[in-house]
Length: 130
Image (tube, rainbow, N blue to C red; front, side, top):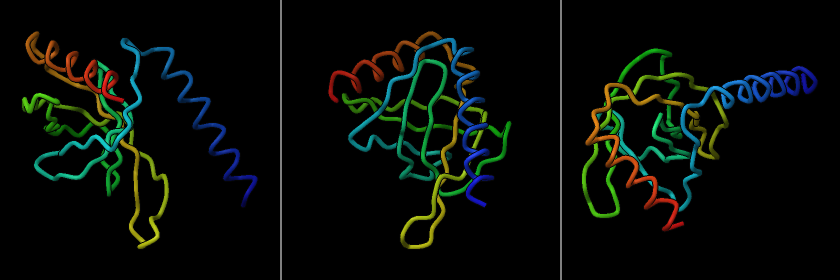
């Protein structure tokens, strides 16, 4: 069982490496517990963000290809609500209270120039403030 789990993890990281090579924008790791909401459900923790998308910790696995509203707030309290499409979602652990946790990668879709500019400012603010 351990060998199979190791092979699954190895395959996932090899696949992740190939995804990273195709990225249009570099990712920024998010620290300090920056939170987002999906379709009004709050408490999602951001892991990383770029102008192309965001990776969040979510309490449930999300369906590949599904779309949702991502609610973000800038350090200046500006609300940003880009739409996102689920690119991947994978189980990462069971919390000590028995709840499951997932990492979910969302690609930003239908961004206009103003929203992309605001996301760029948010990303800059998260890196400066870390």
